[in-house]
Image: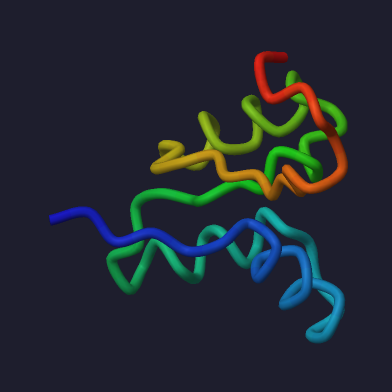
Length: 77
């Protein structure tokens, strides 16, 4: 079974503890977490993020996004 964590939580943990995201990834890898969940809106530098995850042997379990369908009348697009 794969266990994942929100990438946003990794970023916040690194800020709060005062270390890098890579250091947090190494710590959570030690406890058996193997994947991250990404918010579509937080993917700003895809190449950098994928390299970080690959280097630390993490996979992406899901990419989620939030939509407000009430903002558009044309739901075909």
